[in-house]
Image 1 (cartoon, helix red, strand yellow):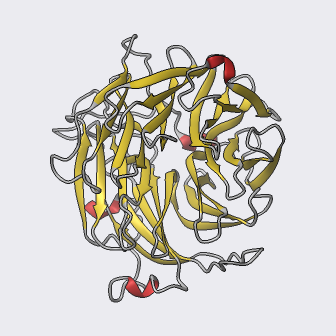
Image 2 (cartoon, helix red, strand yellow):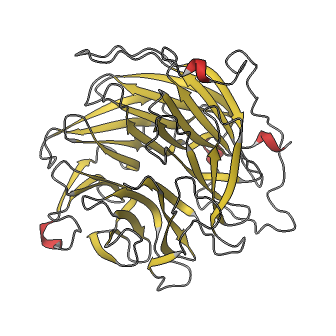
Image 3 (tube, helix red, strand yellow):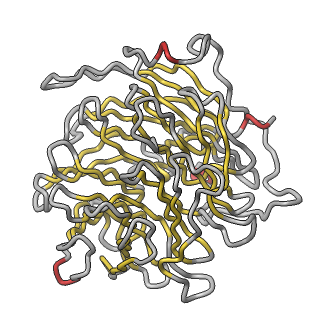
Length: 443
């Protein structure tokens, strides 16, 4: 059944605004709705593409069955009605859309960065929900120089200080962290810089500091979690780039990073300690991260943990919110959300939002609606040759948002995430496999 793949989940939360120490209440599941299926939903991104208070999300993801970048426009707040479109790709073996990321530009329209044919590519829509024929032609920013070991891995796109898109990504061929700063709104030209060339740069994330300068979190194979800051907005002057190791406490720490600027104006990062199975947060005590604190948010002691999580700043209280995957046994895993209780995330309210078979909850992403809705997308990954995907949504229950849901949705039984498997190959597909090992192998 087609709805057993990507789904939307509505949750609610109670948040006190305007107090020195916000009261954080547990989330309550309200609603989940189906979105898409058949081996789709990798590297999901949930974003609100316009500045309208009633705007529902646009959810982008990689279609692994066909090798395309796709997006779903929710037509109502619960995403019961939706429209699916192809942003890039021709259903071929170029894998357009792998490692994709999305940002909403100042004009309210989405901008995408992604991997295609071992190169870094970008595309921009001219309408908020990427209506038919509104996507600009794919542009290759960093072309491939090796047929099987190129660049464009693990992209993260943000709006730069000049209002143009800027992309952090991993160059696998040169084992380095790179940064592409677009010179105009359509990104017909870009300045490309190497931020760190010391066998570093996997799982990068980028944010723009309060001083307008890019800051990065990323994984270094030999050093663990690293932080970098450029000395100019395009990272042109390599000699001015500051780099520092934040956490090398174990032999494998710093994967799956995500960086934001907290409401104190300082960088804050989430990342995974693979050895101990910890979800952790690093908080900078100044804009250059000369001083910092490290905090364990969740202790589970399992190697399969994290898998492309995300952190956003909740506009209701200015505190970080994390969404991430947690495998709990050889057959089950969960989507979890952690609401930080302070700007440094020294403590957090951690919840299991939903659970299903092994792999459920990967590749999550968060977005916040002005109405009080908090949308979460995620992947429902199935072990072996069979994969499905899922998407999720959260809602603030003590606002009028809950009453804006479709009639009966808050009390109706939610759509279950079925364990039934379906083939990932068909007559038009070009089967694709993740480069990571089967996450269920750890048990």
